[in-house]
Image 1: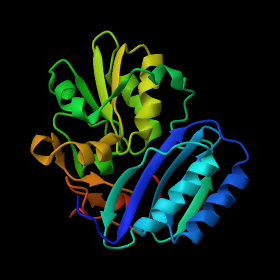
Image 2: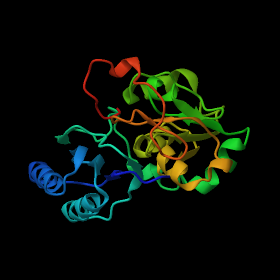
Image 3: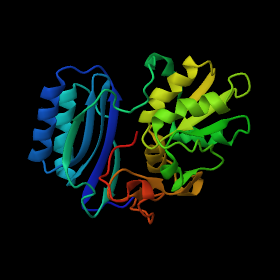
Length: 256
């Protein structure tokens, strides 16, 4: 991973939050103070963010964000020579990732797989590998052999599961997404639906690409990202992918 002039930091956490208006203003002030741009989503269930700025500015912003949220952030990093975001946005929403299903997040305990163990898990022919991202993301790249649900939004994924998967037949499911947040909701959702052996890639594709050496990687293609880079390659540098038709002539938004 080569370091350009701007650091991109992605992070999230499911944790109860209160005083969302106050949190929003504090985050916006910190972003402006440290020349940081990007988008953060906050809700009563937690936060989800992807921001960019000069490396020193990102360090200072993350320190303030940790103080605001009262937690240590688990950050995934990449670098680019240009600012990949146009604005500063902190949005208050009902969910930090939109599933529109009630989920007991506690059922996700014990489902995480570290990037170093992921290859072994998905190389087992008894494992069904599920891509939980949207169709325009899958077009850019995926893990070898992964099932593409061909969904336009995350909230369509439960319908795909109901139509195509059966807990009595699909005994082991390993899922992944860009940074891990969608799987944090979907792994416990599948356990609610009766699927017994469910796994999720900790930190998602971005942490996998950051951790696993290129010569050992099972990732194919590039990884779509929700900023002006469009995609990143296997070394987390700006990729060659064009903006998909989904985003033509419209403002960028966070994945849902």
